[in-house]
Length: 344
Ligand code: NAD
Ligand code: UDP
Image (cartoon, rainbow, N blue to C red; front, side, top):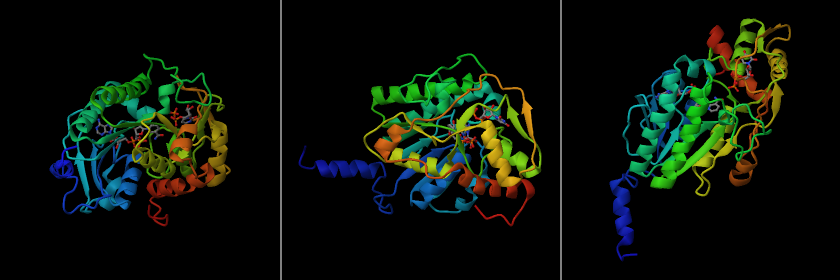
């Protein structure tokens, strides 16, 4: 190492703006794509509360500025209405790449756009990571396992995905995003972290996104029957959003593992059981209406989170019955305009 090696490194850090005079050592410049969405906005809250500089890039396809309203005037916060299928430039230290419609109604609405978001958007953000030396975290999904033949799903399982079905734009799109992340890592040395997120719920979920938790809670608050697709015996595992955000931050800020790591709550519920829990919480008199099953609907889903538990010391803490309470409050406020509900 040359005698002035330390100085050279300092100069490089200065040039990249890492040691800017007005920046604390622990303070990072963090880009969150999809930061106006459900999970993204909770992640932004956490990063802002931790004292980082946060840049949000979001097309507002499903996200909303209101989700970020509390940070609008904050000097450490910036918002860019921008589509990730177009290149974006900034000097940053970390990228959380969440931009992508997540619920079936939204990702099927314009399937080709969903694939473009996953392919071109991920290439653009990996290119940015390559240029700036930023660490890149991909929000992948349990959908990469498709309709799984292995239960619970472990990261080694390669999945059972229909490449030409109506969900493929999302499932295959995320699989390509993972491939791209690993190729940028192998070929260009980009520091990557890949997390496979399982069904997540909480306040700020899009009201009409068609997901089962938002449907049931919305229907219950409106006094409508809860709609179960198929016989209701299919299972899912539901993770409270604050637990997930904690996992994402832990994954990003450790230096050893690239993933992929599953993140979700291993508690497994049938849709019938979920309907009963929501009824009990909101109104026990509600009816249940059975509708035809949706195509390509996985019958079982439950994460094996041994890796995240072992390597990140992460596991969800919030039980479904507890996590549903703030969500019901938030939905009540948004559906009924009930301002007596707590500010979130
Ligand atoms: P969301 O729809 O609330 O958020 C997605 C955000 O991305 C929105 O704000 C949307 O406007 C933005 N976006 C979409 N396309 C974009 C584009 N081309 N350019 C810029 N912004 C764009 O969904 P979410 O539930 O918060 O999901 C966030 C991420 O987590 C997604 O990548 C999703 O695939 C992943 N994920 C979510 C779940 C879940 O249960 N919510 C499960 C697995 C994976
Ligand atoms: N589902 C349901 N009623 C609804 C919405 C969804 O029974 O009103 C079912 C759906 O068929 C699936 C499960 O709930 O079996 C989870 O659906 P969601 O869209 O929330 O998530 P994903 O299928 O992506 O896991």
